[in-house]
Image (cartoon, rainbow over all chains, first blue to last red; front, side, top):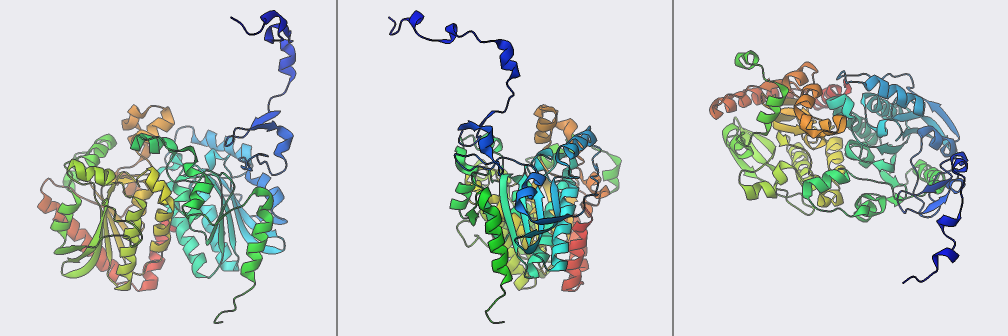
Length: 285
Length: 262
C-alpha cells in the first residue's frame, strides 16, 4: 500500500537535469564543519575561517593566520634547508611540494612581531606542511626563536599545529623535543613569558614537548589536542574511544589548558596578556 | 666488543632480540648492578605506576637514584604495567625522584625498556603529553648527572623522557626509534608486515645510532648475566666519574650542547 500516488508526487523522476550543468558548478560552495557536521555557505567561513555554528577553527596556512594576527612581522631563518638524514625515499619531492604549498622552508614560520604595540617573538606552525610534523629544521627554527627571545628579553607566542614527529627524519626528529625543551627552560629561567596556542591538530611529540610547556596554554575551540592518535588508542586498548576525548574543551576540563579562545578574539586576548605581563611586578621588588 | 663486531646482525634480528621475553628484567638489573635498593612509590598526586620502578640505591658504595621501566614477568604483572608502557603518573613519579636526587646531590641512573608511553584513554585524560613535556623541560636543567641505559626497546617520546640527560648507552640487542617498525611500515607502505624492511631504513640499531652520535656507546650483551652486569657497572662507573667531576654549570652546559647538535 502506498501513501502517495507516485505519479502525482514531484520526485527525482520528474526533474530533467542537464548533467553538463552540474559540471559547471564549482565545488566548495557548500562546506561542512568536520566537528559539528553542519553545512554552510563558503562565504560564511569568513576572514577567520571558522565554522559559523560551533566556532571550530579550520586548518589554515601559517601566512594566512599571520595576516589577521599581527601589525608588523619580520621573518627569521627563512633560508634554513631541511636535511635528509635517513636518505628517505622520495622525501625531497614531498618537501618541495610542501614548500610550494605553504611558502615556508619547513613546518613553522618564525620571526619578530608586533601585536597592538607589544613586541614579541612569534612562531606559527603550518598544518599544511607534511601535517605540521616536526623535522630537524622545525626544531632548529623554534630553538632559535627561543634563544633570540631570551637574548632580546621578549615574550614568545607559539601557535602549535602538528601531527607529531616527522617519520622521514627518524630519531633526529625525536631529538628536537629535547633540544627545544632546553631553549624553553632557558627562556623561562630568564623570567620571560611563554604563551602557547593549541590549534587543530596538536598531537604526539609536539604535545609531549613545547606545546605543554607554556606559562599560559590557550586553545582554539574544538581543536584536537592529544598525545596518541585515536586509532592507536583503540587498537591498543580494544575499546571504543569517545569522539570528544581529545577536544580542547575536554582537555581543559581535565586541567591541561588555561582557556579556549575563539579566533576572532585571539588578537585582543594576546594583546591583553602581553601587556599584562609587561606592567612590571609590584611584589618584593 | 670483538665478538659483537664479528657476527653482524640485521636490524630485524636486533628488533626481535630487543623485544625478547627472556631479556634481562628490571628486577634482575637492580639486583645485579646495585649493592642494595629501596623502592620509593608514587607520584604524590594521584597514583603509583607499576611500569616505572624508582628508588634509591648504592652503586659501588655511593648513593644514587635509580629509575627503571618495568615490563613485568608474569601475565598479571604485564597487564598491570601495560607491557612496560608508563602512564603519566609514571613520568611524574620519575620526575619527583629526579628532583629529589637533585636536592640531595646524588646522580641519577635510568634503565629504559619501553615500546613507548601508554596510549590509552586514561593516559590521555591524565595528560600524557604534559607529563613527558615536563620531564624534558625539568631534566634539561637538573643539577646532577643523569645517565640512561636503553636495555631493550627505546620507543619514542616515552623513552626520551627518561633518556634526555647527559649520556645514553644502549645494550647490544636494543633499539631506539621515533616509532615502531610496524607503525613505520604501515604509514610508508600501508603494510605493517614489512616491518623488517622498515627496521633497516630507520637506522634504529645501536651501531647506526652510535655512528650518528645519538648515543654514547654500546654495552655488549653476553649470555651470562654476571658478565653483562660487569659491563654495565664498568660503563656506569666511568660515566658517573666523568660527569661528577664537572661543576654544575659545566654539566648543564655540556648537556645542552649534546642536544643542540641535532
